[in-house]
Image (cartoon, rainbow, N blue to C red; front, side, top):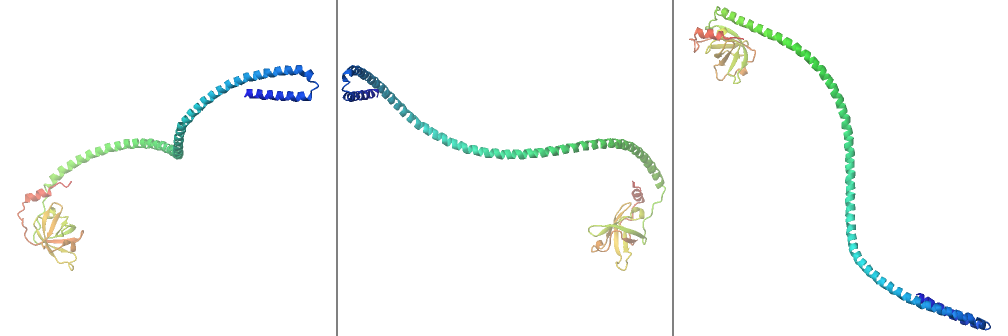
Length: 305
């Protein structure tokens, strides 16, 4: 490139010289010396241009080699860029997926943050309730201490009363023992009541009716002269309403008896009621008139305590 520049410059100088020669013919002689000098300079310039040409050729060769090397590097870079592009596309896809995951994570984080805020609010409420419960606990502990103090006093009072009760129990047992001894000595001297004889009339009160309706209970027994297997004619106060009916004493103890109706078709629930008065009249012989007087004594001496 420098060589072409020098060549063009030389042509311009030659043309300028001819133009100047024709325009200054008169001063040609005087300028011959300058022309020679200029020619010498031109030759120097041409020589320098040749040298520059050679240098330019060397530089051009160097540039061509550098261009070839750069082109090779470019091709390699293009080849590498294809793999890098694929990797970059994969990375872009991965980044897009990670972006979606990040967005989901952010949503979850927001939800967790909201939940955390709610939990913190609940914790604050629970702390307030805890403080209230702590205050109530302190008050209850104070009341408990007061109640324990009162309880201790009551316990000591109760222990004293219990000791007195124990003393009274001992006194009662001693009195009961003395009473039993005195009662046995006195009862041995009493004359036992005789049996109810035929025609004897006894006023009783119905205490209860059996579920089957075939009998009823009374509060009279051995002490009133009733014995097992005695037959009676029973009648109520309302004779106009109810006719007399026959009964038999089947179970007799000291203080009560069970009276069974002789008629199987008779139902006590239809006629009798608890608390109703009856009159029993002995009408015939019993199945056990031979009951010994010793058995009667043993039945009457049963302890009532």
